[in-house]
Image 1 (cartoon, rainbow, N blue to C red):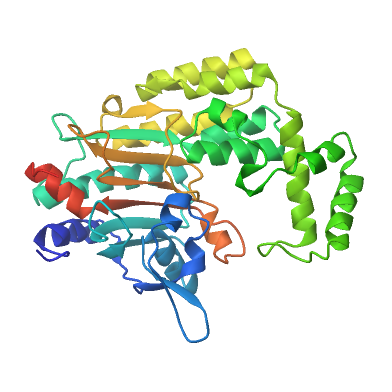
Image 2 (cartoon, helix red, strand yellow):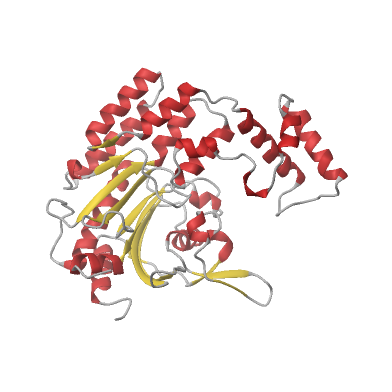
Length: 383
């Protein structure tokens, strides 16, 4: 069976008809642009190099390649919508390593809540259009799909409101993206797998930041170390200071831990979850009004586009395993196989384009539709 068959083309045609122009970036991509996307993706890359030693990989997903295409175009910085449908390549010992992926990416729109809702509903419409081209509704009632939603921006705002140090915010946010519990994040060794640096960390405890950085840089200089893994002595010193702050538990109280755990336990009907989140913020004395207003506005736009909000499942702990997501996220799963990989998923990634070279942040949101998984789900085939 061809990867891009009538089923895939029906999905692609629905996306194009919705105003998302077809974009097919090259299959061969610079490998480095995917290294900071998440541990899972990095480990699945098919790598090669040219005669100059430059590393490339087969396209493992579309969001970053389409983003690069947009930034290289004359429309960079403007409102543009793209769709795609083609092969992607990820190593897997259990499934095919080449598979078809369709999807959409929207860049430059300031009406974030409205376009978040559009991306979600259009993705569901397109998935169902592959099954029945005449089906134009994202309605989930009686559907084979269950949709989970979350908000990475809401969690980030909570960590900011708790006045945690940048070190703790980075560590908790990264661990959360990797699916770790708060207990696992807090109990993890600050040294990691690279070795025991407790002696150096002990000397840094209580030292002022300027003196501690100079101390570490002097140690590296005496040892004749000019760089490690591409990091400069100043960057290595900063990492030691971060580890020292984490080791002492500075700025992280039992009260703050309890608030985070309570936040992450909230799930269920999105409207009811919003009420619980506002209650938590009020009782903890945290200002989450702006981000929760945005949350509610998004739900309003989703409802206006014909999707029953009560059919969605919100979880404050829900995240996707790609590091670039910064806001609304979602996944659609086969209702009878909810523990398996999603048939569609996406979210907002407002900071990604700046990391790819844009001079300023550009609003961006998109979704991927996994054709093979959808085909098996709708056809009821054994996996």
